[in-house]
Image (cartoon, rainbow, N blue to C red; front, side, top):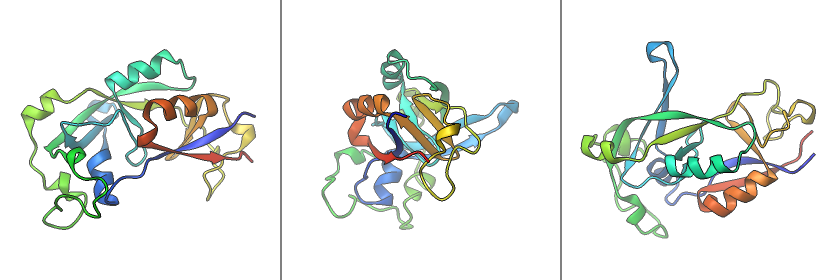
Length: 190
């Protein structure tokens, strides 16, 4: 079996504060009987790929580039914006031990939860897409990031629960095109 990797988010400056600023918060809604993914995040900058808990989100431009590679097992579903807060965190000193400012509560999520929604900014934000990867029930080896070799669907991307596994081919492409936003953990199938 070819090499596979668990896809994780790259290191963020300032720990959880940087993670929230970079990745945002995702929620799933079931309005009108159809599941919808909504994101609350900072703007105007959006990394080409983010890995908020349980999801992989990409910008429209990055989705187009990914689509030309025809990775098996991967499709996309649109993501809506719940809230956009104007914070230009990408201009802050990423090597500083602390972010330029903290939310007044001290809680990282409150950059977004307590921040003011900017409707004009939201209207200019890039369209976002979520990776849509069919789950393979029983694939994950419990308590690990490994998967069961006999249950893997043989695709470039597979998932169960919050873990996403990618092929060597996909890992090489992502490392070249967005490697600073991601981390790849080698996995030995069992």
